[in-house]
Length: 385
Image 1 (cartoon, one colour):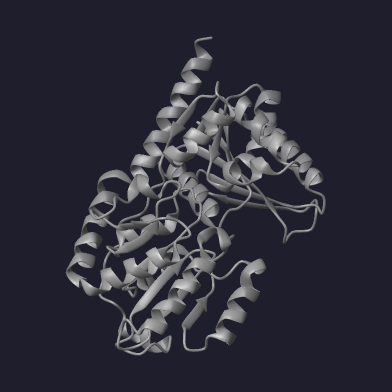
Image 2 (cartoon, helix red, strand yellow; image 1 turned 45 degrees about the vertical axis):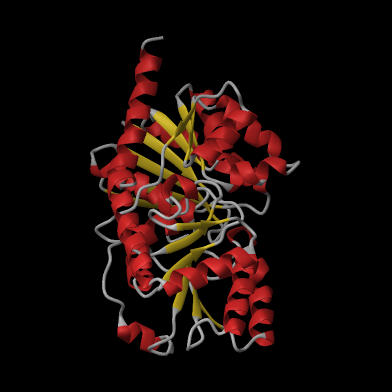
């Protein structure tokens, strides 16, 4: 098959969507399919095109315009040009907003099947935006199939578009790359963290949606309660969203006794050594899809304390392979952290069970096969019309 993937982000762009679309693109290419990824790029001048070719995989980055509608026109027209050069069998839009809308419009115009992948914020926030909600609904209704990374998102998609065909396809994670290892004492020293200080970790772009305020409030209470002999440290690996940087700056200034260290976005191959440094991975999201950080931490056998939102309960079962608390519950988060630190054997048990869950249910091979089965079904149905 020749497949066109549309995404607003692709590595080295940060974020879960970028990581996920790269995983699918590379997986499809590795099993022999021809893949063309088309991505708007704000770092390129409008009209400029970057064309990168690898075996079975091309990455087209085009300069984004100042106006969003101009960018989408360019996106749509570039899909048409690439289809004219060598026809696509189908188009996949990653994220309903933007990529999904353009994918459906281009697929209808070119007469080829379209899959739209719902990831999280597209159905949880954008649909309530007066300027984008109509496009979200149109993309859901116009796609041949909508895939969702969690059962929660699939229910939301069906609520918005009752007649749409919606399939759940979970994210996968590379368990050869993300695996348990001894904590790196040299890295701890480089970060300036005392040998006996507990380390809490958060991976991804820290922001309000991910429970940043809740996390900081909980850490403050834990430090005040002196639950450990040495004050715990919080590592925010992946940077802080621009709108929330002031929050972190003020927090650090007002509570210097709370140890918070912010590290920039890092590529996947660098992350395992950080995961294996954490005594506890904290993911207190207020809403979420199925975060890559969750599956990566599970693959590294980290004990994980997360919230019961979105796709997190699809992977994490309370007391079996992780620990779940209600979203926004600062006291619940503090209590759970204190409890888990009192029982190191329980943390280790949860971590081992978490990796087994990933090995059994959340591998890239399973994710790729689920997508390929869907694509073949779509093309077979189109041929039989």
